[in-house]
Image (tube, rainbow, N blue to C red):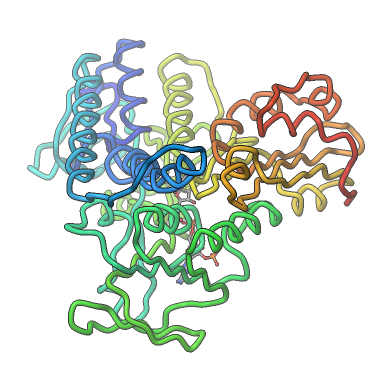
Length: 453
Ligand code: NDP
């Protein structure tokens, strides 16, 4: 049976673009890709990239304060959101152009249209045209969701935050995950009065307790008004502001409310309902096996639409493994263990492996942890603290988890991740000579266990 294409990819985000370009450019497959919105997906257009630029922008006021303490004659006369926003979007346009070019240069045919499946080998575009393909890869990503509280439509999500005409004077951020905590820090740094409501007992659920406790303390220290065990009851418009009634009895006005209350897979209206064999999970995600294959052998899915580990580099890995499996005949499962990740709060948290709580549940462990005031900010009279923490198996001596809360923790954890991935023991860390004077040297100089668990 002959098909129009060897591969049709639905979705031009990090995972879809990578799979399309490698399949076409490196294996010679005939590939098409459909994207209804902008190329680059969540990461490039409304996620990691603009977020990180905003993190950078938000850190300068602190640097100016610190520079003054070091003897510099510096002043901070304010932030111009308009200037920054124009530059940020110009950068996103540039990156989108690069994504488009990558596809073009690798011979991928692109359609700027929404696509849905008609059957196991046919895709229909929004203009009604149909294309057949030997394999179909769904990489449609995810989107933010708001909770069902009265007036929720008055709030925005991370999709809109990059497009504000002006920065609000005050904002309420709802949620306690990556996005809520990162934007609390960003907007606080940019001079917005930030309040954060999180329904649970401590932000960043699932991460190491001690690490997230320190992040929360430092966020409060930096001026973010964090309310734990608190949620929105209802929201109403009052002039230009939004009145929010909360479960803690608060009844306050905010210029803006941002929900960072989780994301759901973009798996609806893709024609999957009519395709017997494609299973959907509790959140609506497309269920796949370790090779990213659905119950229909010709249909695969990668990235956030499968709701496995929702991170850009993971979607890229899944895309590469898919090409290796399907187009190079080398079945390659994706290993979702020991993925290093960073949360760009202020201070950052870098983490790989198990939290203390999970490690202790798994087996007897030793905990090595040190928290201290780093030299750079301590000299400037700041009370910022950082944390370096290793969790070690008492039986194998392997490092099961590493958690760093510190400026630059994202950069540090990438490197620690290699050692831990290789199965490094505590003694391997100890044998490594310290790089002095740095914060991260503490990771190789913790001689005695803080506690056992
Ligand atoms: P998360 O799932 O991480 O967090 C959602 C938060 O919203 C949780 O604190 C959750 O509370 C809370 N929540 C959920 N439903 C409600 C509700 N009805 N009312 C009140 N609060 C609610 O989602 P995010 O949106 O922060 O991020 C999505 C994913 O994107 C992340 O998991 C991560 O994979 C990825 N990401 C990665 C980044 C990075 O690598 N630096 C940055 C940003 C995103 P509870 O804990 O009680 O469930």
